[in-house]
Image 1 (tube, rainbow, N blue to C red):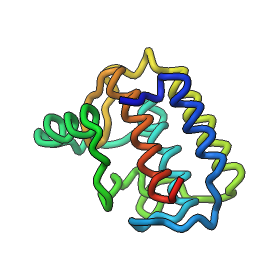
Image 2 (image 1 turned 90 degrees about the horizontal axis):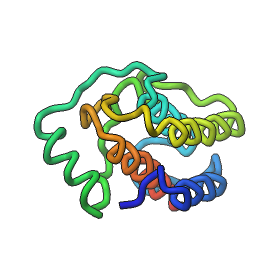
Image 3 (image 1 turned 90 degrees about the vertical axis):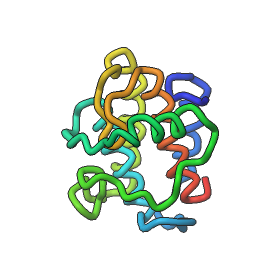
Image 4 (image 1 turned 120 degrees about the horizontal axis):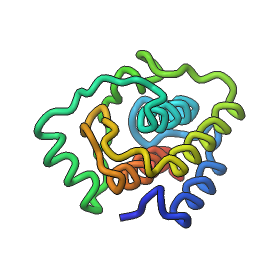
Amino acid sequence: MPSAFDPPSVQELHRRLEGFRPDADRRWGRMTAHGAIVHMTDAFKMALGERPIRDKSTWFLRTFGRWIGFHTPLPWPRGFRAPRELDQERGGTKPESWDEDLAALHAALDRFVAGEDRLAGHVHAVFGPLSRQEWGVWGYRHTHHHLRQFGL
């Protein structure tokens, strides 16, 4: 499984993020390109403990959802509603300046990678507490999922 803690994988994510444009057309979902940028930044902040979030995980998501999402190559489902604190329309960060928000996402990804040793046990809003390895896979797969959403 690719991991955000693997240098070539994180370099790939940064390169793909550089190809993101504010007018990118989504292939599914409701997020705009700018909304996806601030959503991904908020999600990295959640992982780092910089953005408080309620644990809405269930037994099913902590077991089967986590196993499928982090231990199989199956693509993540489309149309899954983000938790309120990570949804730019319902309580997440509002998009402001494309260039500043994209720079903030690059910085959040770098802080996430640099903080890998402190992530074990941090709570994900949907999957509950994750191991260091699971956070690495999540960091890659969550970003990859939204880049795919916009054809990147």
